Length: 313
Image (cartoon, rainbow, N blue to C red; front, side):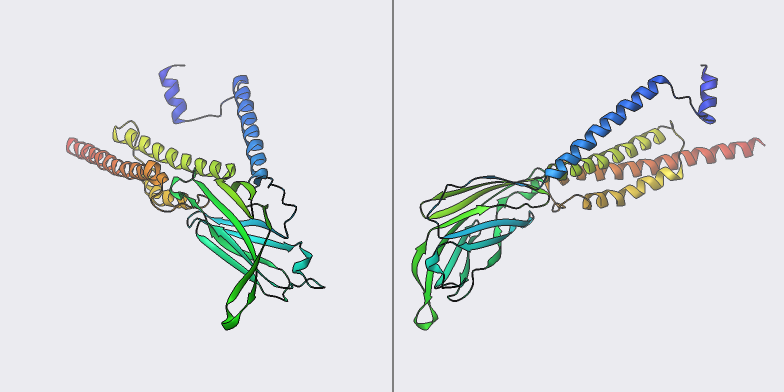
């Protein structure tokens, strides 16, 4: 095909026939997409589970507790846990389901002790606590958080002056189950002497990481494309168009919006901002400036050409 015919085709594009090679490439792309889609959906279905290591058997436990995490805030390193309590020692109960003496449950975590009391004559119930963890959310989306919980159980009675006096200790057993959306939790429940404790490791689920990486890739792509378009226009390889300037300007508003779409939006100043977003926004600003320079230069050339024509006439 000659150069003139190629230019004519570019100026007046016509539908192209789909070749056999194009069909094969299309089928390969569709197959890759289908496989990727299936893998992501499969990973999403198993996300948010807790992988547990069974605790050491405690046959003498008179008090059972199951810790069920229901929410986790990585910004504040706070996990909301629902504790399900049960009494297996008949000596702690009256003829019914009420306590024959007061029971005090103390949950220890990274942020200190959390106490739950059940007075004599009350039925045993559940409790929802917010416990602290440790971790660096600024490493989003590859941040890793750790936590632990331990439990001690005591009996008490109200003494003179309303002071609760400890009257004995109870062998307790602590276990964990449940799930937290968006997080994979590896928990190990252990028992040592009179204490039961749980060690936890929290990482963001695969679907959360994948979604964040895709959005980051989108921001990089659109900024690089804007920069390439600006360079092509500045070097007069492409004619300036108002749509290009509008697109560059819109990027300055779209990029922060894309960041807010990140699941579990990280705080400002995270590693993501330093390694990616700062430079992506800077590139978008540079592209906008180059596009304005290109517009000014091409507009100046057009005006000079029009003046030359008028003078020649």
